[in-house]
Image (tube, rainbow, N blue to C red):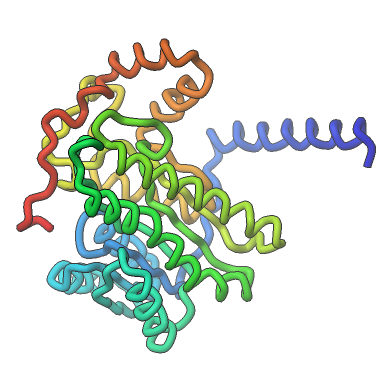
Length: 306
């Protein structure tokens, strides 16, 4: 195909998809059915993981719950059953350990079946300055927030690819799109999670597996306890997000095959500005939005909450 023809084709398609996106401002996107799908959620023992389990359960799915917290898992399983799940299975799994992920994944395949919706949600935050953070804590952050995504996808993507049907959901963070003072290890892990999910999604398309969808979720701080103590300078622009709202938006994104979900909506503009403006202006805006002081009052979850 020559340069002129290919360029015209790209321009026409870009225009067409732009018109489609504009139309969806007024006409809701069609939602797919997930009834009967096997949904695996890591970090399901509390917070957003628990809420997503309830939301998926209400849609008539088989729910598989992973967490390191046995007590939290049992409570989520109870709530999922009450919400209407076809079946609920829960497994204690330390997602920071590759061997543990593979072992429990094989158990899930034997006892439940092939996972068709994988939600990589488990995450931790140290809340320490880079220089002050112990090496072991930095390694643990990367193992849970990033490497676990590699191992779960290695375990469950092949079955999705064989059927050309499935969905990989990566719960990342807005800190995976823009650096934050005091969150060096967390930002690094979430930047990696975003890059990994986006690349795997493109790999599926390149292999002709267009039935295996990807959704990458990048929220601002969520009021789940993980970032207890953190405050936002301008809550009208960058509010601390309510967990119920976030869970519902994630499920909606999955049902409509939305690739990127940023929350709140102001993050779309902030990320665009960050990628366009000179660094000096970005620093000024970062100071204006309070990005340099977000972690000054960080406390995080108490051991009881964990």
